[in-house]
Image (spheres, one colour):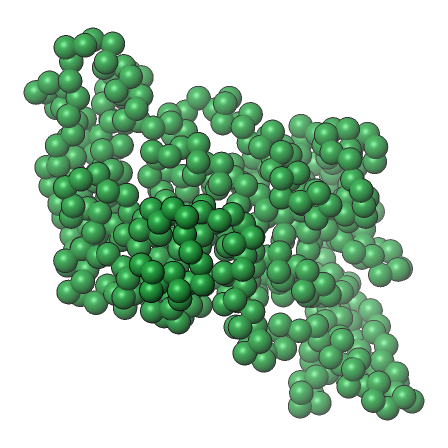
Length: 224
Length: 224
């Protein structure tokens, strides 16, 4: 337990929360006594993870439209990412599993690792509060965003602007060229012009979204 | 705005957050200047709502299994509930909508009301922090739970125990009668006995879950 706490970089006041986070239902079901498994903490940890990631993305990426934020959030809180985080701290080693689960490779099963990782987030939240959980989660999330060089984590208009303004005589403008559909389901089409040449076109549910997509197309055209 | 703040029972330090929460994309798209609509705050508000409700359910219903908690959370954060909350404070009246949206009844559209309600939650969170948002959200949620007399909000085993112990000679026991499936996808079957008579049977992914379902069946049989 102490070894795992070192990996978590968090010391529990009440180690019961961590014990529960490590108890898979297959183990709890095998024991005679009324043992609590990690499913309830997983329920809570899912929501703790979501607010921490959402708050971070909302504040760090203040120019990204909602659709892009939703995409990034989904990529960070999916089973694949959570399982990867769990492997970084070798969480599988510390799990309490039932015999059958142990034999069939449960310690390496992505769904079990991802669920346990969420239960650990809840354990830290219950023991140390939101700020302790935030420190823990952002350590993983910030790493992923930094290593993930995809422009989906950046603001396309800003990137394009930064590239273009290396030549002071060049000028970028965004032109709304079309609006379609009823008001509650409108689509906008925007062109991005470099001086008077169209270098990208984008569509979106909002003008800002369409501009981002036009800048994205321009960046792709420029090989960025 | 002051009138709405009274209904929210919250006074903003920075009214910009509330203004954004009330700005539907159809209005922002119609204006010439680069106006921010409520979609990004809706993204954040969704996660703020989820952690507040999850934390509340986790702590208040400490004996309900994860599956029941998930069901209750879903019923509280769905469009129908959020739209009802929005109507309680007459939120539609304060929305800024585009002309077409106005004409086609956008002020009463459930999706617009639900989204704006989430954006208002984010506005309070951004302006006053998590505790301010919690006060605001729990006012609505606690009301729904109180008015909602469904046993899904209660712990069936506890209710059954309370009824049975009115006769001191009666005794409830839970008996595991079957286990099916591979370890990672097991199903348990439990009988609840009143003295030596079976009064309910339940199935579940955990023993505790199966016991809750058995107690539920017994309560139904008893007309509760």
